[in-house]
Image (cartoon, rainbow, N blue to C red; front, top):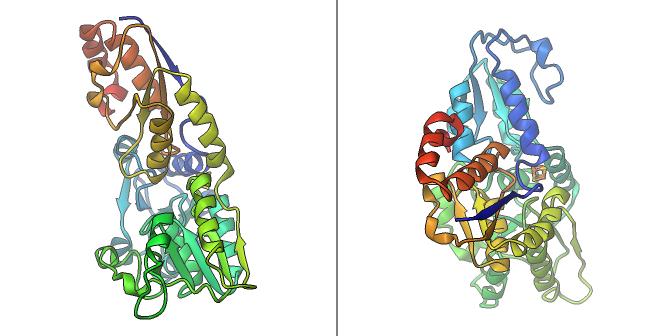
Length: 360
Ligand code: SF4
């Protein structure tokens, strides 16, 4: 079979994730670090001595939503912990990933003398600040329970309402006992992260947007700009006369710019192989765009999922991924396709030789 393979130049880690992964790797180098060596780390507690003499570092949550990349970093000594585990740690270092954290995490770190290696993306930091400084009712378009959203909600406890999609706003036309709307979720009544299961069963009755009071709308940085626009329009048309509704443009420019380019990329190839972890919210958004632009789009987490039946002779194959997809995974997929579609035996041989293939 003859095929052409091209990797999308706009795919791969965003700046925020690159910065977090590079910082993790730097701190994982097997040497004795000193607090002065980490002086550039924002939010670091310099009074906490770093006693590590081996490569080991805690990361609060997965540094990137990609199982293969996490596995690679794990072999270097990066250990993913959750907030409950962090509460039991003392006198050590913990990395905060690009998604950011709510103020509560910083309080726990201070109490437990934990030195934070703060890799919160500058774009997310700016968004957190904006939300903190905005008075009144705040609506966040984002994924319930997502780390970035948890961090945003924490900036304005008791004033934030999460809207996951436009559908829930329409559903909210049915009045609730409290006179509010269904479908959005007020995040003041429960801790998003400490009780995720409780949150999933959160009764719709407590979810209210009050259209008679001013609203400020923000978006999670990785959301689809078109959907955000739609949600804002839905909210605006329900506002009581004369009441202000302010939309803040908070989708990350690096991500927003990818959408139109990705659609173009998907349309200009016969088949699209989209590489992304299942947990990646950005991956889901981008894959859906590819699928809409090109029905022969396939989302894979591993090379083993690639099915030869997807391809025909003379196909051009485009390989792309999410902001959490490492470049090495795109390269591995490209090499694998070039070889396997021509010679299966050769591909198996290649798989045995190259580490990336085995991990992927
Ligand atoms: S998507 Fe944008 S805002 Fe989010 S971590 Fe990446 S660079 Fe930062």
